[in-house]
Image 1 (cartoon, rainbow, N blue to C red):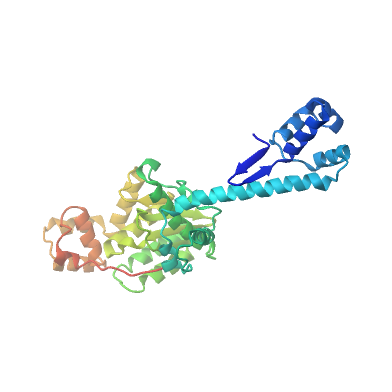
Image 2 (cartoon, rainbow, N blue to C red):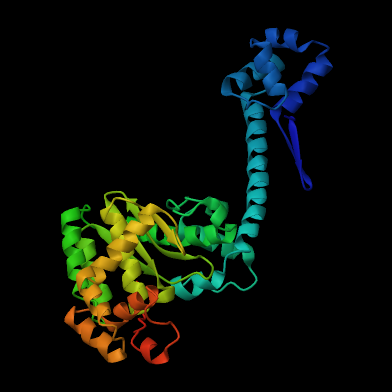
Amino acid sequence: MSNYIEYKEKVAFHPGYYVKEIIEESGLTQEDFAKRLGTTPKNLSLLVRGEQSLSIDMAMKLSRLMGTGAAYWLNLQQAYDALIVEFKSDQELEQERVVFEKIDYKYFRNNFMLPNLPRKIDEQIERIRKFLDIATLTVLKRPDMAARFRSSAENLSEANTIKANIMMQIATNEALHADAPKFNKKDFEGAVDYALTLTESHTDFYDKIKAAFFNAGVIFVILPNISGSRINGATKKVGDNIVLMVNDRRLYADTFWFTLFHEIGHILSGDYGVSFDMEPGENEKLADEYARNRLIPSEQYDEFISHQIFSPQSIKDFSKSIHRDPGIVLGRLQKDGIVGYNDAKMNALKKQYKLRS
């Protein structure tokens, strides 16, 4: 390691740089100088090479030997440290700018009231950093930064990772500021049963579910989608609580309720993490099965499809009999390959929600 560092047009001189000059001018060897200084040759060598910061004890010894004040040497160390911080901060900002290229500032401006700062990239970076409560945007590149990713890293691009981490960080921060009671599994199961009674509602169900989950220690958050995040939903332990996040990109009745109950399945099985599109794995299959069977009881569904009568009216009638939105039933039929996805009359059964947390 050098005892001075050049960065752009500035140079930071370590105190060891000046000590080395003094030793050379004295005509002494480092070993002899160390003896006069009252330290070991190793400690002096580390200082001279810039590999060790100047201690108060060393500043005192140098001041006595050289007839200078200890503050002189301590100020040299302080000036060096300040420049190193400046250099590293600038280097970090350069790396943040690379990350920022994969982030759309409008997402924060439009959804979270961050100020409009056209062409002021560094200020935009600072605002996002502060909003997310992170030291640097570069941490967003790390898989599992904000929550465990169920997908392996090779299945995700860096942009996917950054955007998913942003959404999880927002959800986590909301949970941290929520004064919710400690998570209680039994109470949560009751809240889930209550949520099932709201599947036919198209207006105020979100606030009702959110309140019921909150009382059980689960913070339910629906976030605006970040294009390219590939995230469907996520669960995470936050202190004594659990955050359950759902992406709003597919807020049709079938996809909303399925995603919600898929994540509920993860919570009840104690499996926390981020769910992406086409997620593989046994835990995902179990969560899918839980969502299917809770939303549409298997025996009743099997009986319905056995009649082989699939029209908008038959779906409405069956949905009414099990107290579910017709879009939920249609989505299941389409997922199972029984009904096509391109039938306009069928798709008219799917209600699209407009929600914000």
